[in-house]
Length: 131
Image (cartoon, rainbow, N blue to C red; front, side, top):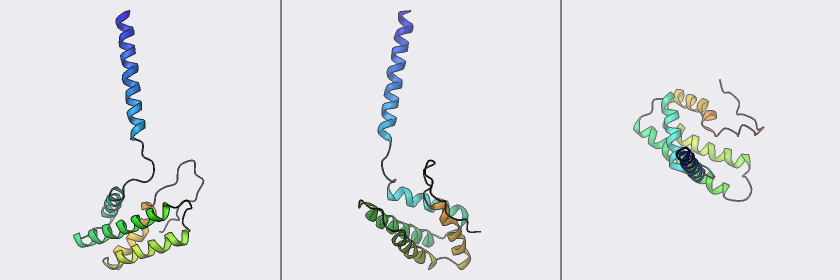
């Protein structure tokens, strides 16, 4: 009987430690820029075959974009949609310069899937499908 109680106590302690360590691993805010850029490269590369130069251009364009957006998000107010769209245009024009017209059209169709999805409880609109 004492052994069973000891085992239960040890299990409870171990479980508590595991939950505590998981809680500490939760992130606040967006993932690091490098992680986001790598995610974009992986997603794009699955649908579009990119050369090393094209990958580097996409990487640099998204890095600059995420840095700019992160700076804008540091203020207390969310930036206007038009401001974000302007930065998206700058990013996309850099990418357009290294892609063929066909690959660029494929890239544009993919961009709605690269955006962060709203929280399931959020009632925001999803991006329109670009078929």
